[in-house]
Length: 252
Image (cartoon, rainbow, N blue to C red; front, side, top):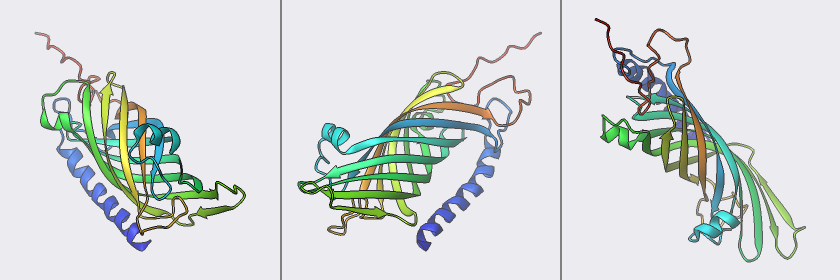
């Protein structure tokens, strides 16, 4: 537990030291230098969380995995956009449900996860003059989660056992996504992330000393925020790639 807190503390120190330096060196929208409170976004999303572990039968069958070993989930992301919208530092809150079984045992679980992650937009990164509304995203991060699992036997459903974490567990993850901007203020996203829990009790079954995994497949809706502060006379120009307005002509 102390090691998990240490990892999160180091990540928080890294992000807090990175943001002011990166934000002060950016130049979005001509001579305007965005500060800490500029260039943010909020994303709400929903989808499915899927379980991979001792009590899972369909790890190689995508259709059965989504229909038989997955449950509804939803989340929210708050992102700070950096370096002409090539990178973001993002915090996420996720709630999901899991289920699985083998030939004798069934389990159900719910999880609450909070994390911090770094994201890179590959088209913006490798094509500095990109003006399209589409981008491909890769991300990775660390966090903590809590869960409660209920397990029972198929032959005797009354024979139940419950695993309820009293303290948060450590998790790390990676994934990829797609983003399409609908304009200066709105966009849609699709994301798929795989998470490794540093715990083998998600299904309330410890076997082979292998940690359990779970994934999150989601569709989301994004609202882009140029600044949390009041307008300071930037001419209404958007900070985000793919959302630039045409420059104003000077009068002679």
